[in-house]
Length: 324
Figure 1 (tube, rainbow, N blue to C red):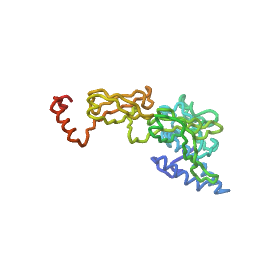
Figure 2 (figure 1 turned 90 degrees about the vertical axis):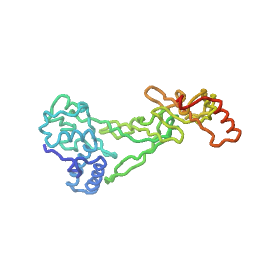
Figure 3 (figure 1 turned 120 degrees about the vertical axis):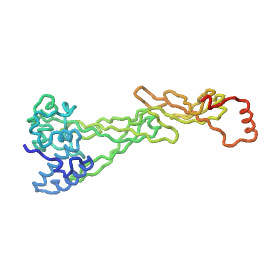
């Protein structure tokens, strides 16, 4: 059977980005959709071809395998697949709610990617196992989306309503985005870069198969007062020179309210005090809050204050440049 150049069918270069491939498909789908060209057999055939090309090139795993095989795929009995392909099972669910029966794809597609044709000339033990056999219901693709949280939302957790834009296709083949609102339960202590899995909220399955999952990747917004160091929360707390020298109890903010913190006597500026369990969730458990002591000196002083500072300077033999 003949090799199909999927890049040529969509009119894109072999190094085209996923966005370019998607745009090319949508443009051709509008031109060739059978509903817009009733009775035009060529348009229907072209529509099936571009669907087949898009089904492969939009999927990174399928595209990688297709690029590996190339035009000489029929001579590939000794072809060594990339690591990890031994158990790959591709599905045929189209984007935007469209579903394409595997029977609508060419023999070339089914021979390589599955269906009644198996692996054809490739044979082999491990390589053929993931692709052959009878057509069966297949699970939909997993989908990833970004979810931005405030630091307080990530720390406290709770329920949050989010609205996503889901790609769909009208009956006449026009792509559009429709809103989809979901209620998300955010685990307390969610860290930056973590993921929340919403089962069954991904792409639709094929042939009655289950839908894929939706993964929300967490991004935490910068905070006006708190900073993150991995899963630890850092806050600067100003103290007076006499509080640092003599020790003191000061009010410090945390992400779930203020607490009293004892400042030990003789602490230096920039030193950090640890409040355990007041950070985000990490692999080894909850992180901590780190309170960085920042010694502040009055900008102006009264005559009495200046006299006391001068008296202290005379009485003390402390030299910070020697004791640093």
